[in-house]
Image (spheres, rainbow, N blue to C red):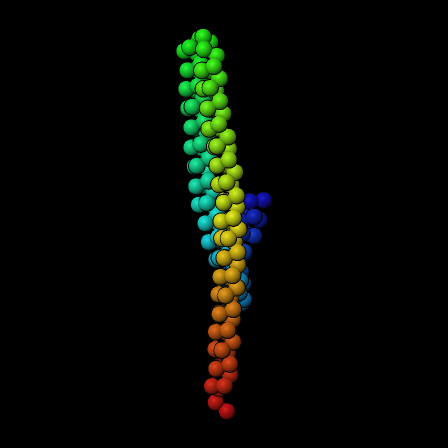
Length: 144
């Protein structure tokens, strides 16, 4: 079964150059697609790093809250309540930042895709125009 799969893959790679050469619009579209994917991956990586940093901060501050509340042994419920309230406030700020960065991530990624589409169309049209111009010049340059 693996040999059949290998043959299919090899057939694809043998045919791929002819496909791109036959249609000058396809090459730029494929290239722009992969460039957009690369940008989206970088965006997702950055978002993930920030998200993990905020989760780490939440854990570290939660540990501090537990230690502080345990240290007073319940002798000062008002201080414990204030400590917990502060942690919750900062946690809500982190969640709001998660949401803001998520919206920004989606907006930037959509922008990368849209920009890639426009660039691919432009490149394809330019290559097609060059091909048509070249073909017209060749046709007119033929001696009679």
